[in-house]
Image (cartoon, rainbow, N blue to C red):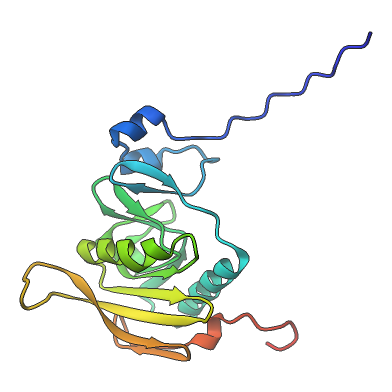
Length: 208
């Protein structure tokens, strides 16, 4: 009788500690010390949430948008894909694109501070639409990030918001819609931008 071959044990997939999840006491430092094979995560009030993988259409929009900012933002700014932002104690988010002050973010940084960020951009997917439309803009505004863009798909449409403080509620920060379009976004903040939405539409090969 021959012995069955012994299969090597598969490497364990990283998961957050259920006890610490129940205690909601994870911190930004814990995220900085995650193993290299850990999935993309956000920290929401001390609890780690795994961020679902984006589909190819979502990734295409985010990549093309980031590339556009590489080529058009003034020298003091730089665009990042998948750079997190620490929006509060025990709370981080992973925008699809962040535009930051170039000298504030070094090559070894995984998370930017809100004061370093001038624009956060989210591409809405079915699994993230409630968070992108309601939770994240409130958090970004409370953290003092000056501008927020939300990109809707099917049909493609961009909503651009700017931070303001309501006269009737001093101290409260919220976003005001300053532009929305399916063709061209033109805004003055965080710097003068004229963004043709056709720049994030994937064109057939040979027609670029």
